[in-house]
Length: 432
Image (cartoon, rainbow, N blue to C red; front, side):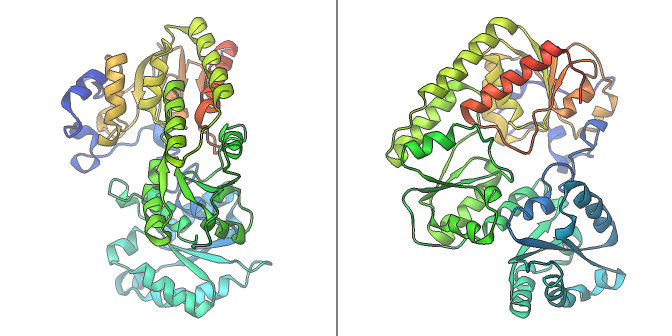
């Protein structure tokens, strides 16, 4: 084979949802990590890995129970991420690996670490790794024992890289852990929780103005709370608004535990789709959202971009604040041609791939885990790349990373994207 494996959007759509190529299924082949993936392909890597994500709970600390290799990696990342003072380590030796002796040390370790910070933590997360997954450790039982012994709330969390392709991958599991601290309180009909992200939505997102105008005056996000008590007030919500499918299991858990229903909105960069979702959401909860101003702004920005850049050729990576397949389909409506997408895909992406196939059937889809990607050589040919990983494949093209911690959403997300693209194109900036 002289070039890396790819499949066009049309060919993949024709195969159907249940016939994904073996190259996209990790359990069916060797897994390759290209230089473009090295900053994000671990659950503990850049952005929000399991450890940083768990510490979104205010007034919390984490105890990582692991062999030295995982501990060293976590030490480096916690220092870079600014949360090293909230991380503690219980190192496992070879005897622990064989006997599970380390589990008896955890309650005492929890009692010791809550006395270290100047302000006593309200929550301790215990994070275990693949070693304990293989040992079959019952972490929930361990946490109950530690909670009773130390007199502090103890929450289980799992850094199981080997479950990345399972039904509950690490980043879905940690969301469930984070929201597990929320307890039922008297329902406030004017309160809503935004679930899904570990950082807040952009401050300019229209949700923060549209919702209060429609009577939803208390909008809560775990990442905006500064105290554990503030976190507990999320238990007053009338419903949860799910903004990221990776938090679906957490929303299901809250519905079962707290009787708190949820409504899911999909992040889209198509103004018509955004408008339709707000209309359906309003109908579901019995209100009407006044989104005319925000929709008009987004459509004006889209029309201007279409006039100036129709025929623009881009390449997309997967390190973006978007589903790259949905993003490609949305941009196709503006006359933007996505030549290549460098992203793993699964049956969950089929709806977007089918849409893309009707709009841009020749778009090439490369799955980064295929060993054939070792044959890929950086080249020219794109007017713009979106995503830091895409910048590696097209080093000479301007690049818009579009992967900040703060999340873009809704009409203002579309405006931010298009303005960022325009700025990079006009400046001819070099990839970051």
